[in-house]
Image 1 (cartoon, one colour):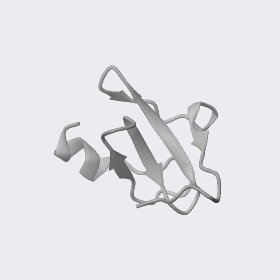
Image 2 (image 1 turned 180 degrees about the vertical axis):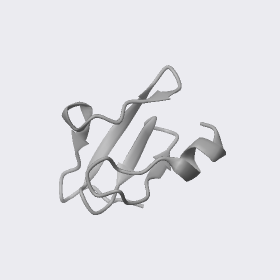
Image 3 (image 1 turned 45 degrees about the vertical axis):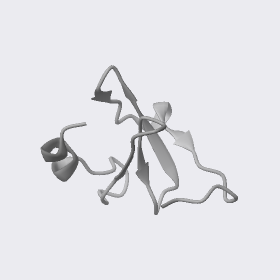
Image 4 (image 1 turned 90 degrees about the vertical axis):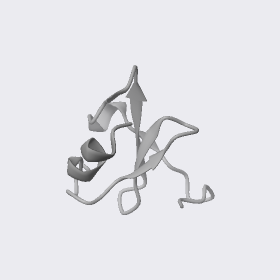
Length: 60
């Protein structure tokens, strides 16, 4: 994932910063507890494509 792209991407819901999880190929929004997938190197920034992060899952 290009670091410059990470600097400009924000959560489409809250406009907050995202955390890149390389191992899961996801971009994480802590406040909304959503994980946006990265498919073929392209972030899919659609709410309906995002995975809800359960409360027991730690977000780092």
